[in-house]
Length: 85
Image 1 (cartoon, helix red, strand yellow):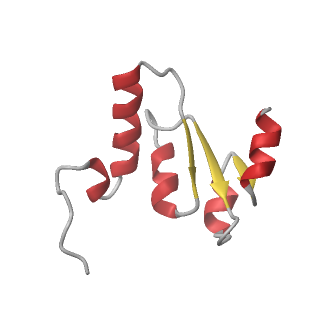
Image 2 (cartoon, rainbow, N blue to C red):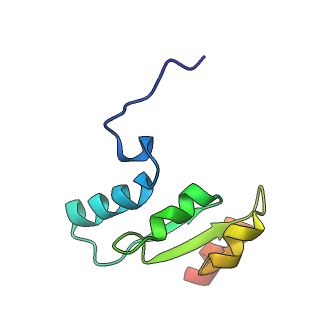
Image 3 (cartoon, helix red, strand yellow):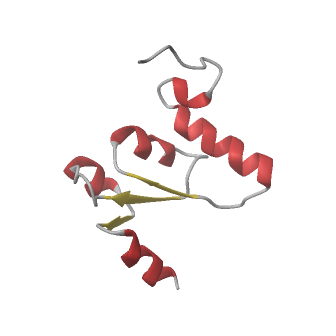
C-alpha cells in the first residue's frame, strides 16, 4: 500500500535529484560527485551544479535514451568495481 510521501524531500518533485546532489555536495564538502542510475529522473541529477558524472546502470533495463547521454554505461557493478580498482 502507498500512503504518501514527504513533500519536503528534494526527490518528491521534478528535477529534485539534481537539488539533492547539490545538497549532498554542500553538506559534505564534496568537490565532485558521481550519480549512478538507470532512468531519466536519475539522469536529471547531471544538471549544472549537480552530479559531475553520470553512470548509466543497464543491468536490469537498458534505456537507450539515458544510455546515449551517460558518461559511462555499465551492465554489471563488478565491471564498474574492477574499473575503479
